[in-house]
Image (tube, one colour):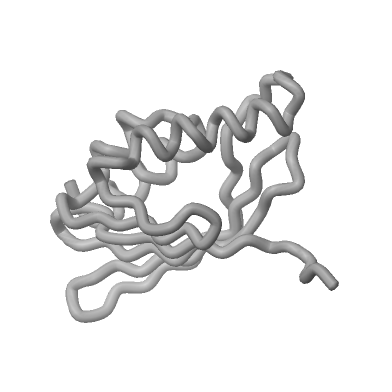
Length: 122
C-alpha cells in the first residue's frame, strides 16, 4: 500500500470505529499520543479503541450515530519520504472534538498526536 492508502485506511477505521481497519494501516512502531490517556502502542490499540467506544456510547446515552468519528479539514504534505497529515475530528453526538497530527511512512501510520478542544477550567 502507498502512504496515502495507509492514511485512507486509518481514517476509515476511525470514522467507522473499526479496530481491524485501523490496525491494518499501522506500522509496527506506531504510537498514539493521547493527552487524556497517554501513549498507546500498536499492540494496545484495539483495547484503547474499545475503551473509547464505551465512553462515547455512555456520552451518547446509548444512541447510535452513523459515524463513530467525523474528520474534516484534512491537510497533507510529504517531505523526506514521510507523509504528514493534520485533521480536525469530532465525535458526533458528543462535545468531544480536537485535532490530530499523523505521520505515515512506507510501512504504515507511524504516529498520531491528538489534541482536545476544550475550555480551560478556572
